Amino acid sequence: MAVERTFSMIKPDATRRNLTGAITKLLEEAGLTVVASKRVWMSRREAEGFYAVHKERPFFGELVDSMSSGPTVVQVLQGENAIAKNREVMGATNPTQAEEGTIRKEFALSIGENSVHGSDAPETAAQEIAYWFSETEIVG
Ligand code: DAT
Ligand code: MG
Image (tube, rainbow, N blue to C red; front, side, top):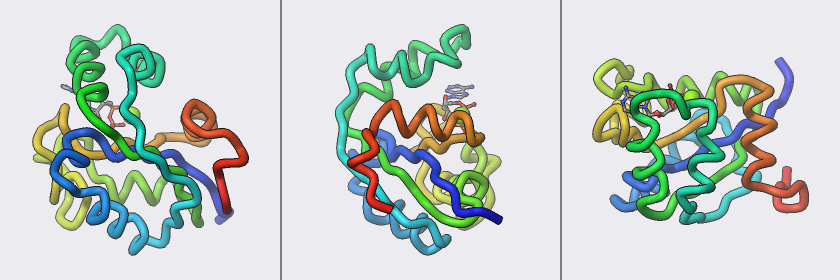
């Protein structure tokens, strides 16, 4: 399995509760290395662009409101099989369905305020990394 990079975001519901360290610890314990990280309070426009794939979904307005409601921490994670591994550590989108030991099981408040985002495929990982980071900000 090749070393990959994926994009991760610690959402406002989690930064508000001072969970940045606790969430990063779970990612690092899973073997993922944080090769870029910064705190960003995204605008509504940035949130709409980032989540454009969901713009026809009924929850889009709520999603944009929540993502622009406070600071997030955007990160690039690197490691073996990083995209799938990050999704595994995150747990299911709906925290009631997330497995024990996952970030969402432990910390998510609801399906909307579910504490973390993670890319779902190599193409989206590349797009999402480029949306928030320049190459020089990533130190692998
Ligand atoms: P994931 O974040 O697990 O990749 P997704 O891409 O389907 O899930 O949805 C993106 C985000 O949109 C999700 O993290 C929270 C929000 N969301 C998804 N389904 C929702 C719903 N039924 N009600 C409210 N928010 C929802
Ligand atoms: Mg998704």
